[in-house]
Image 1 (cartoon, rainbow, N blue to C red):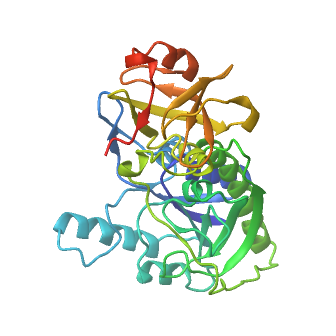
Image 2: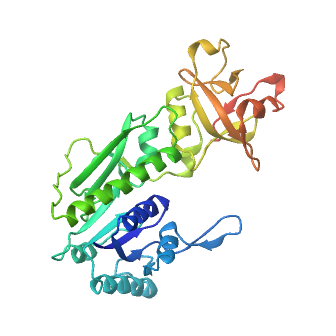
Image 3: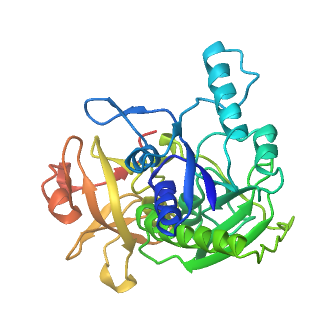
Length: 332
């Protein structure tokens, strides 16, 4: 099949590589403009663009797909993308973490017979966690499982009919980084299955999303990283894992901002000391025990400003604290 692919990050590139490896021809790639990143703040191509260039796939990088934009340059970019789609011979469009909203007129092009329309790989079990950050929000909320849906796209925010789905359990030590990788592999395989069914003429059964159970995964903000130690140990552990790798959970420790990267719920028999909320009440073999609003959490990996990630016990034993009292506090 001839595919137009729209996506930007590594999650999308993995699906793109799987589609190509399955023998489908990607005839056009849409991705976000190059962004400045890294210590030198140099312009960097997205993973999708890098793969497209490697395979000599034409690439477009409009800042918007809305042709009614007031900025002449952006309007021209949108017009060029619109014309490119009209003039491209393709069977279906696959959209994965693209980062731009597809206007109805773009969706209309993909639905013109004999085309099959646009399909989105979404990293949740819809209608739960529609929106920008489904992986992080599932961990933060303490969900026991999540998955991937292949959705027939429409103009609403992740509201289209689901055509294929697969789920997986969220491990107790799962971070957004590890779950991202597992879901990326799951989604890549699932979109290949969907395209194979279309190619074989078997079609895809469309299941409308139920009205009940809708939740929205709002974009992760840096301000959310500041931990509130009055929450339960279970909630704090979930946030530390959800915010790994971005933005990284933070807290003040004796006037120094510390990033917390790895944690787990503490065994009730592993500590005996009392202490105020946020206090380090003991050391374990791998980390430190911290009192929460309800329960105790074991912090395993931390990072000082300008330093590298390190074992929490080693790091905190070197902190010079008045009367040896170590206490985490929210920055605010």
